[in-house]
Image (cartoon, rainbow, N blue to C red):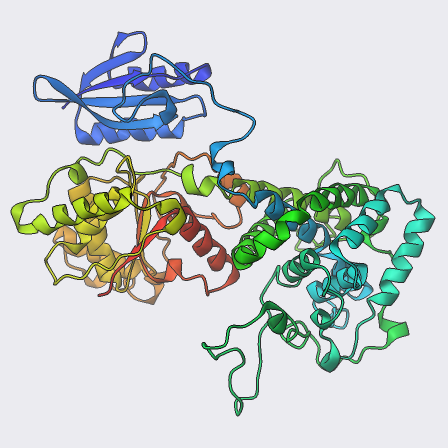
Length: 600
């Protein structure tokens, strides 16, 4: 095929793309190249451009169609440098750079950031407890363990700060910490510790009292106690499962009042609390730290400014808390995986975690006040990026197969797309969403129709969706069909299943090979441990940097689940009920794309 490349790169990106394109095509202008190339060669050009892409990179590729017209094939980098057909604009309008477009749709983003920041600043207060500090300093001594999980102690300490006050009152108290002298902070801390004294295990229900007048504090407290795991409800099997009556809606307060430390927060059930012996904080609390107080006061002031949003936000309470918890957990895991900050200056002798040296020892790592402030910063950066997941992640564009009418045998696909286009004009998808059921017999073209329907939901006919299927073999077959018919490459399509062995057998069948005896070990139990991304290096263009999600996006499979425009998978990757890291992966994937699925 004959292709033409046009570069609208700026600054150093122009020199980099020139080096790449000069290796594959003839330069026929200052920013234009042309050559005869195969599809494999064109894929190689795109891959190399994507690997070297920066914010200032913008390259379009056009191919000759017949003798009188060209067709846009793809764009690498900043699509704003071209229109939907790949033409270079000759006039420009000015954008408001003070606020990104994707922030405008998130009315409660300021409140979300306040929740993330306050929860992060208090989430590990319980690590100040002498029992936890003793465990960090003596990791091999089983007797030096904290008998109650640190997030429960953090909840009790935060409750003591709120202590029946209104949101305006406890935020004002937090603001005053910054101006207090060391002696005043010590007195404030002693009163806080006295008020936070734990009750007996069977009477420890923190949400029963103390939060009635403070909705913001209730939300922050929930985030603190769930930043590692959700409460594990237990009940007598002879009784009805609590909150199982679908005809009787569950109120938030009724649910919260049931939470006790017996719901997964006790490590040692034989331990009996003795006030004078056990309730000790020899090195104080992080509120004695100047950097922590400064940050807490800053966010308390911002919280006071968004209190007017609380009544309106109650309608989306569950979504708001889920997003805040997601950002908090990602920020916590990200900064916990980092080394301590060598620039941090603090006299506190409290620590949040330990590292591991070459000899296998576990030295103390991050100071607790450093950890709280830095986790807040990391979590806020992720929270700020959440709106970008809607619009800034890669999309599969310019898919020619979807623009063509389906053949007569599948004419129903064309009709479905036309009906959907008419329906879209009368409905606001951004406000109402879209739900459809596609039912047809085997061989009627449901797989391809799903792609056409998903493209028809967007003005530019681009694709970004997750297709969840029931069977692994069906998942692989669907991936093959999308590659063959839609011509999607590895940067646009990810096919994810839970078994490398099933994938291996499928590929053998596709190649017309048989599995010999020497391959039996590969397709038995040992093959299941093989990495799905073995030998692959896929580069995705995205405005969402993966370094902030490093603890979740640890391999090619995880990155594909989030960044690939079209993901075909069996149900498991999109099920948010699994282990903590898998829950975060699943939620990010569902947040970042439309979701489709059909049965076997």
